[in-house]
Length: 437
Image (cartoon, helix red, strand yellow):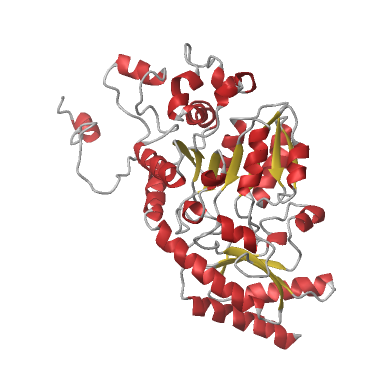
């Protein structure tokens, strides 16, 4: 190598591909990768061999994260992307195109509803929203052009627990995959694949990361849906792949359960660019390493807080399926044997005067000191939000009511602080509300 100053400052001290013995996955903070030869590059671009291509599609730190989350969910492949919203969008776009159709639960996170009812409509993809507990509604909404059923395992913010097995059976009878957003439960509290789900998505920004520092999302193919059984319905996988001559994704990757992931990475991540950075991949990996420990404490503390709120006179209702009188308590026992997630909500007692009720909500939320007002969930810190004016503010009054959200609904995400401190913070704010009444 030349010893010119500029050459030295750019290249000295590093040989690509040199193995190291670091015990933690490194941060591969690079945009691109050196190929061994032009033939090596051509083979990777043509999917004839695996290898690092360009960091828009993936990076080596991300690959560790993908493999780890796929293993936790019992899946065959995963695709990590820049956010949970990107994970939902790309999982569905890989299955449904313009003129086709999706059936979704109406009890979805507000941002997901925005995506499906507005942006997907712009792209010519129809979406019907139905009550997730109405099995006849799921069946009745399916059309010949339906390409997926979609719901959350545990809803945000009212913690409704989905009957995953029943909806999965309906999807499979119709010959379409069932996609479950498992963000709130995480694979520690529930593996949807054990109950028939085919694809799982996560906002890794939440509990998988757990520290509130890094955005990310992940799609996990559980390898259970046979796209080859009805090839005419899935031409994107079963017909020659137009952008890579000689490749049929299902023939090349279907046996290993990698075909859907290959499609998402080489088309949708490649074209739209919602890439997960190496640094965020590393940060999310650190969170995953303590997932079981954190989720156990989140769940225990959340239940303790819910029991406290259920006995407070300022609270009309607590939406927590760990409470015996909750409509989804039975479903929680079936689907959440290791505990109920710590994202739930409660309704303040209403006065009948809308302005007065809103003032009461503001008083309680603004009166909290330990619990932070943040538009997020799944953080180490305890968080509070008002769905009707924040995360679900784009929904109509009818949609809010259908999702179990009232103007007095307050959402909590219980963190890792001492549960007695969390309860004391809620108590002092709620008690002041009672004193003002």
